[in-house]
Image (cartoon, rainbow over all chains, first blue to last red; front, top):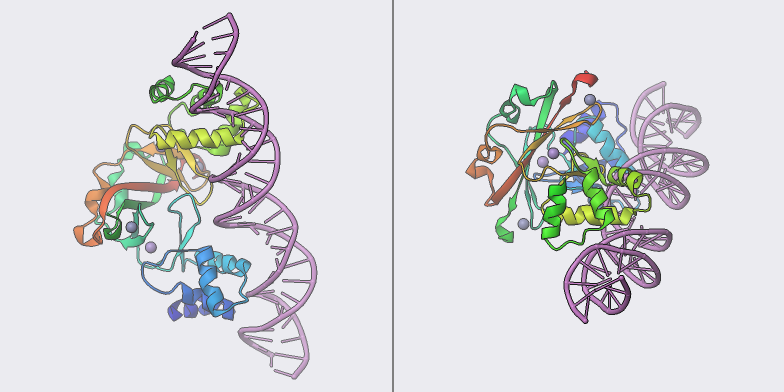
Length: 136
Length: 136
DNA sequence: TATTGACTTAGACAAAGTCCAAGATAGGAT
DNA sequence: ATCCTATCTTGGACTTTGTCTAAGTCAATA
Ligand SMILES: [Mn+2]
Ligand SMILES: [Mn+2]
Ligand SMILES: [Zn+2]
Ligand SMILES: [Zn+2]
């Protein structure tokens, strides 16, 4: 995820230890952590980091398009570092595990003109639900 | 929506004035109200109805499968009385208006087997985003 | 190494939702 | 028609998630 840090520096960001730690925590595949989960893991590396800074940093990364905000249930938002590869989500109804998935075709094409109510459509998010191998 | 009340009575529900009012407030098409919006409208008809009862009643209707819970943004959940006709949602990024829409085909079919991670998939929710005629 | 605007912090605040003990009542029993 | 009681409702305390602010700190440039 030092790609992310480099991109952020290129955008005029001060490179603070707090931001470095948030970026490190978000590194990986199929990562979809809540703000509080990010904070808990960040505290392991930088004990004095505050909740407010985690929220600020995540919000800025979302604004810059470097991190996606995912609202899966009505609970806490999740933060997804995989912002540069379009994908959808598959969620286990049992344990909440979230996987990145890549369906075929464009879901927008499945919506007929007479079902668009005059909207100009800009995107579609698909959430697949099911049971993972462990939960069956 | 007296269909709903009849179905609920058939399930052994006591028919209280509070439940009647919540069911009335949820009547209609393209209805996707938050719990607080339901409460505000319920209070117009039954001033002493409490927030707790609105939450309880909505939760029970969801459990019974008579009302759907829709989490569109990270904000409050919305309650959808259109539970017996499968549909998806189209949301205006400008004003938040929500329309029921019916895409062609089954979105689950678009997910290849090698993208299922061993999950047994039970459903897919699609949220289309765009701008409504008023917001363009 | 001095400067300073950007950054971080603790804690107050707000919105959305859950939970509980006490009181009220729908609807079957008499 | 009245009684009875399990079910329902209520206000308020509490939790979770998130926002905001004023005061202090520091990264980066000169
Ligand atoms: Mn993802
Ligand atoms: Mn709907
Ligand atoms: Zn699972
Ligand atoms: Zn609009």
